[in-house]
Image 1 (tube, one colour):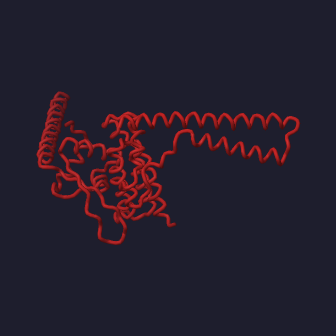
Image 2 (cartoon, each protein chain N blue to C red):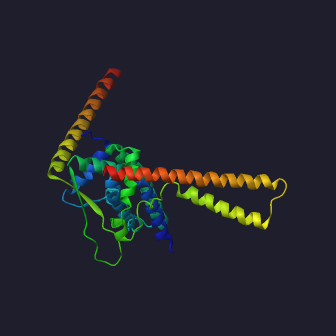
Image 3 (spheres, each protein chain N blue to C red):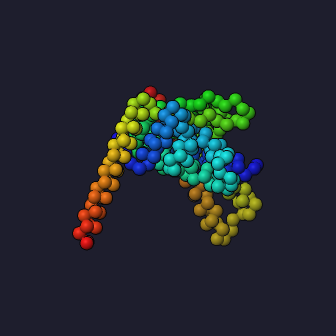
Length: 175
Length: 111
């Protein structure tokens, strides 16, 4: 990968992150608008040094945070609205998926999935370790503690997942 | 509309050629403003109906460059911008006249 596309990718990443703060109905267009200026900055014939052009691109991208803050304030949207719009922005077929650029928001996992999976993995690891090195002496406490942590993670994950399912069904009923 | 220094610079760039398409980066360069100042201002002018924006058609070359968004003053925008800049320049020339006038008596009393 050459230096320039890497800078462009970094700048796009910054703009993408800044645009996640915007309300869902405007973020897609704003990201498209701001990211489209990057090639013009990075290939500006008026700026001789590539380093200067790169610095300008990154400064421009950093300015997107300030723009997003102002625009969000102007739109008067609460953080909760923005979060809910995250889900809407992940719909396939938006401009990002069509244009080949990465989507603005990562697909969201259901709540509780990560702690539950972590807990299960910890359990499995613990079982393998116990078989390989049978606990003895003070190691018993360590294994017991790891087992409790794994259980807590799994239970917390399941509870959060159940709450998430209930919330989702509540949203679906309201629609 | 409150005419601030950055806004005045942006309006001057637009009025230099009201029919020209102005892109974000070109505006930044011409007005000497950072993106964090320019874009909220453009959004505000757009919401007030003083600016119109549109996407350029996708470029024909194989560069893969994405289309850019450009801005132009509306008819109302041209009228308001000219009015604001005219009142701003008349106000600043009045300030200059006053400061020159106040400097003279001070110089005269020193003698």
